[in-house]
Structure formats: C-alpha cells, structure tokens
Length: 103
Image 1: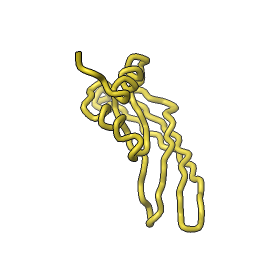
Image 2: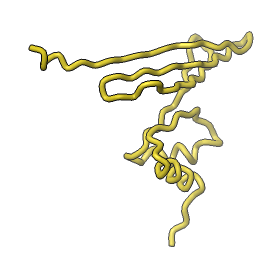
Image 3: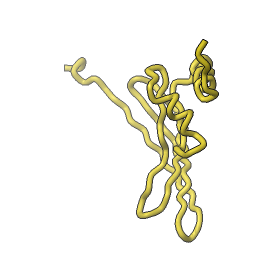
C-alpha cells in the first residue's frame, strides 16, 4: 500500500469537507500543500502575494458572493514596506449579463 504524505491527507480532507478554493502564501513550510493542490481538478489553489513598488503585499481575500454571474471579493491586505506594515482595504465586484437574450 502506497503511503500518503501529510499534505495529501490534509488536502483530501479539505475536498471531502466541500472546500473548492484554498488561498495561501507560498513558502517552504507550505510547499508540500502547494504540490498536493497543483495536480487536482477538484480544488483551486490561489496564491495571494504580490510585489508592488518594491514592497511585499499579502492579500487576504474573502468571497462574499460567488455566483456564476456575480463575484464579490473583499480584500484586507497587508503591505510590508521598509518603513513598516500598512493595511489596505479593497472591494472588487464583477457581474456578467448575457445581453444576447435581450435582443
């Protein structure tokens, strides 16, 4: 019997619980989990790190609405600059209408 890695067991548990997306920050301690998510078709891994103007930005997205025609995300992000840490809030909302039905 093949042995499973702890990361594989953890990701299997998330999927069994109905998790569809995992948001995270890449790094050595999470590489096993990232490797377990990558080949899967039933789970989406989303990396939330950017460098803006030479400063590291870690984004904390929360999905408020997740429908096929409407997505609303709230982000309370941390920006790490040479002078310290700053918090930034952002709201993103996208809506899609199929206008061809109204012609």
